[in-house]
Image 1: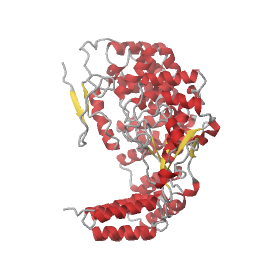
Image 2: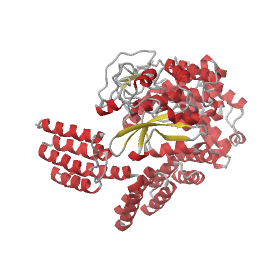
Image 3: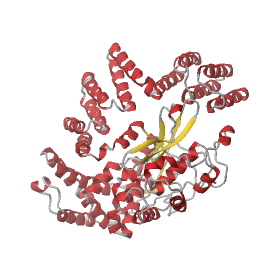
Image 4: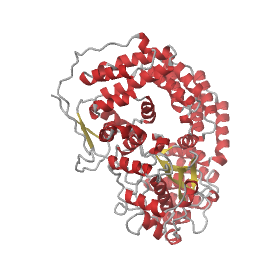
Amino acid sequence: MTTDRVFHWSGTRRPNRGFSAACLLAIVVLLPGALRLRAQSYRPLSEAEMLQPPTTERLKGLVDFANKADWDQLTPMFRTAALRAYEKGRLDAAERWYQVYRWSALFAEPENRFIQQWIKEMQAARVVHANLPHRYVATKAHLGQWLSPGLQAWLVGDAQFSAEFFGLYSRLDYLPEVLRILDELHGRNPARFARYANLALAIAVVYDLPPPPDWPHGQASPDDLTRRLPPPENAFDWWIRQDQLDRTYHRLADLRADELKFVVDAAAPFTELEWSQRNVDVPLHELAKAYALVRYSVDRENRQAYVWANGPYTLPAILGAGGICVDQAYFAIQVGKARAVPTLLFRGEGQDGRHAWFGFLDENGQWQLDAGRYGELRFVTGYARDPQTWKEISDHELKFLSERFRSLPAYHISTVHRQFADDYLQAKNLAAAIKAAWLAVKFEPRNLDAWTTLLVAQSAQGDGPKQIEATLYQAIAAFGNYPDLEAAFSGRLCASLRARGQLSAADFEEQRILAKNRIARGDLALLRAQESLQKTVETRPPAEAIKAYNTLVDTQGRGAGIDFYDKIVTPFVQYLVKHNCPAEARQAADRARAALYVPPGSQLEGEFDRLFRDLKTAPLVR
C-alpha cells in the first residue's frame, strides 16, 4: 500500500477551486496491486540485433514481456543497444533503439517524480497561470499506466510517430494528460488514430492544460469569450470530418504536429467555425484579406475603448459590429483554423501605438507572418503565443517555422546526434557528448539544442575560456540571420572576453551587434538598454538611476515610440513613485514626452496623458 502525494505550486497564490474528473483538475492515481511478475524472463538482445533496427516481431515480444512485468526491467538494455549501434556508426539502428529506450523510460517513470519535476519546470518558465489546477495528487504508479497495452505496442513500433513525438515533446507538457488523451483517441478507433496520428498528437499537447485567462488575447471579458477548449475527442472528430468533407485548405495528413497545434487551438466554438466556412469566402492564397473583412472601428479607437463591449464575442458579431486591430486578427485566425490552416495572432508595438496582426501557413507550405501588419508604422517585432506551452514564441522560433528546415533529412540526422550528445552529457561522458554535439551542428548549424549541449559539455569538461570562446564565435556565425540568437551568443562571448581582460575585443563585438541591430532590430538594442537600466535600479541609489535614465532617454529615446515608453518610461516612473520621488517621476515623464515621437491623437499621446493624470494623484508610499 502506498500513500498519495499532493503537489502544489510553491510560492504562488493559487485559486482554491473544486475539482472535476472530466477536466482533470486533480489527478488521483491509484497504484495497481503488486502483481507485476518481475520474475518473468526474456531473451536479451544479441550484438547482431543491436546493430540492426528492431524487427516488428522482436518488439512485440519485448512489449508483451513489459506489460507482464515492468518496463524498467528493459530500459537499460534498450539504452545499451542504442549506444552500441551509435558507436558502431549504425545510425538507423541507433535511432530506432533510442526511440524504444525513450518510450520505455517514459512508461517506467513514476508519476509522482514526473509531477514534482514538471512543477519546477513550469515555475522556472514562468507559465503558471490562474486557470491551472492548484494541486496535483499522485502515487508511485508509472506513467505507462495511462496507456493501454495496444497503444504502448503501437507507439514503440511506429518509427515515424516516435520521431514526431520526441521532436515535439516539451518539458512543460503535462504527460499524464497527454498520454490519457492519446489513449482515449486511440481506443475509440485505432485505425483512424493511426491515419491521423499527428492530429491526435497536436490535440494532446495543446489540450493537456487549460489555456491562460488572457488567451487568445485579453481584450474581451470572460463573460463574452469563454476561453475553453472543447473535449479532445470532439476536436479530433470535428477536424477529421472537415478533412473528409474536403472543407479544409490543407490536408491534415500533409501537416506535422508542430503545425497542427496552430490549428487545434481555435478559441471559437465549432458552430462558429462552421459559420465561417459558409459565410467567409476567402481562398487560401488570399487569406490575408480576412483581416480587412472586419470594418475598423475608428470610434472605438478615438474613445480608447480597447475592450470589446458589444455582447458575446462571436465571429458573426465581430463581422457585423466591426472592431479594432485585435478583433480583426482574432477573426482572421479563426477563419483560417476553420479550414485547417495553421494561424498565429501577433501583438506588437509600432512607432505611435500598439497593433495586432496575424500569420498563416500558405498554399506553398510557407509561413506568411505579416497579414495586417502595416509597414509604415515600423513595428519592430511581434509576439505570438505557442499553444503547446502558452509561452511567447521567440523571434528565432518564428523564423525556424517559416524556413521549415526541421523537415529536411540533414536536420533529422543532426537531431539523432544531438540526442546522443544529451545522453552522453547526462551520463557525464563529456568527451563523447562533445563529439556527438559537433556532429549535430555539422549536419545542421541551426540546431540550437546541439549548440547548448556542446557549450554545457565543454564547460563541464573544464575547457578553458579560449576554447569556449572559439565555439561561441562559431555559434554566432551559425545564427547570423537570427538576431536574437546572435545577440544572445554574442553577449556570452563579451562576458567571457571581459572576464579575462580582453576589453577591446569585447567592445568591438558589442559595437558590432549594436550597429547591426540599430536599424533592423532596434528592439534588441532596447532590450539591452532595459536590462542595463534594471541592473542600475536594483543596485544603485535613485540619484544614479535617474542619471542613467536621463542618458538613455537623451540617446535612444530621441524619436522612439511606444515600445520605449512601455519598456523604459513606464517602469522607471513607477520605480520613482514607489521610492517617494513624485517630483522626479514627473520630471522623468516630461523628459520622455519631449524626446519620444508622439503624434497628436496617437495611442502614445493617450498613454502620456493618462500617465500625467495618475502622477497628479499618486499617493506617497509610507
